[in-house]
Amino acid sequence: MEMDESSELIQQRVRKLEALRKEGIDPFPNDFKVTHTTSDIYEALGSRSEEELKSLEERFSLAGRIMAIRDFGKASFLQIQDGKGRIQAYLQKNVVGEQAFKYFKRFDIGDFIGLEGKVFRTKTGELTVLVEVFKLLVKSLRPLPEKWHGLTDIEARYRQRYLDLIANPKVREVFLTRIRTIQRIRDFFTLKGFMEVETPMLHPIPGGATAKPFKTHHNALDMDLYMRVAPELFLKRLVIGGFERVFEINRCFRNEGISTQHNPEFTMLEFYQAYATHEVMMETTEELLSSMVQEIQGKLSLTYQGKELHFTRPWQRLHFKEAVLEYGKFDPMIWNEPSKALDVAKGLGLELKKGTSHGRVLADLFKEVVEPHLHQPTFITHYPTEVSPLSRRNGEDPTVVDRFELFIAGREIANGFSELNDPIDQRERFIQQLKERGDEADFYLRLDEDFLRALEFGMPPTAGEGIGIDRWVMLLTDSPSIRDVIFFPLLRMEQ
Image (cartoon, rainbow, N blue to C red; front, side, top):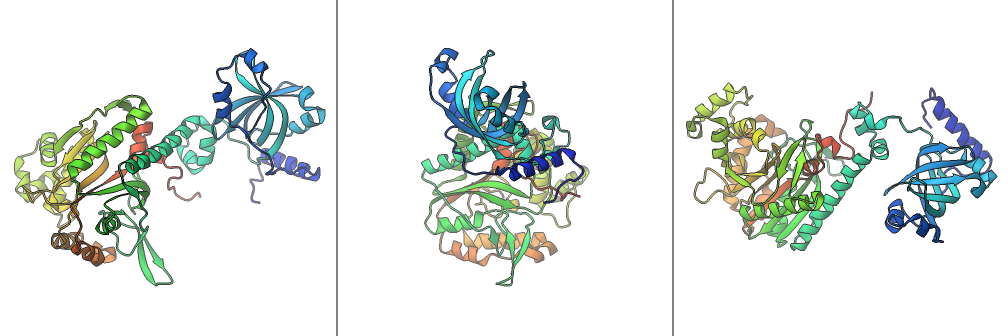
């Protein structure tokens, strides 16, 4: 195996490993039976007094990684960590026997141990396993890094997430919150009669969001494919097929920049409901997210990066136009005269591609002057039709659509709308979208004729929404970067 030959500590452990094997001891057995976890012991005995523990005959069998060893000559205290937490163990020479105690002296911090015994309290009141029998389960060859918790090289923690999880209970709790959050989402929608579905990751035509896709090639079919940027168009096909309430929690991929809020691979919740409107989606979103805050925080507020966020319903709602004019203090004529909007954008130093539509210029202004101010949960509604190719036009003003985006802590968390189900309008919008993308469109964009054909068979009035799971978990866990809530974020290859 490849090894850092310069590390004497590693070589010492390798020598211990070889010595064990020569003595006929397997350093990687798989025959130890675990009956309890650390949390099982705390739940069962955490409230028992020392006298009550002395009267118990029950023995506990648990296993975990050794996180600390305090040697007292003829006895040792250990800190054992399993998947549920940590517990102290006490190992005495006169209890386990001289030969076994000598065998234990070869153990190192980082090794996995299986142990069995009764439970007592130390003089300081700490719940402790009195070891009667133990066994080496894994001989670790690399020592755990010292002072890992205070490591300044954040990238090393992301790259070796397994060490981050071993050493930092707070990091572990972040990911447990993520796991519980996704389970709560599943439970929420299942109780509302939604069906969880799976749709393709490989798309012949990228669609459902305006984003640059990752491209790949299928050799057997000799065809280019794209990692999905969104599942939207396939989920709508299911609504057309009669699945009136569907949701999917899965990966999306966008070949764009990396930042504290963007990872090329991220997790999205999308859900669609027939005979619903974007108003229903906003109400559902309030119910879903506020209930999670209440359950996790114990109240309808949380602190994110030093700012208190309040989730008591209803949340603030602002029209897109109102928000741009209120926060930008612009001349209202930017709404009617594209040249004025363009001048304002250039004055702010925004980089715009040649031929950028009026609606796109307004959207860029919104991103620049409005988004940073939207700290409390806020729905922005009535987006320009030009930047919403899949949304239903507003019945009173066809220049805007029945769409909203949810912003919290100055970032987009959700995007939803009443779906465009007019196939003729949809075709025209797709064509306009291709024109706006110009030369870039030639590489990977073309009309999705199958989706248009599906719409021509008829999609019931429907509303849908996407929620970024990673960004939402960032808020719930007070994490400053999206990399803090993704187990293995994308990083450059190690040099």
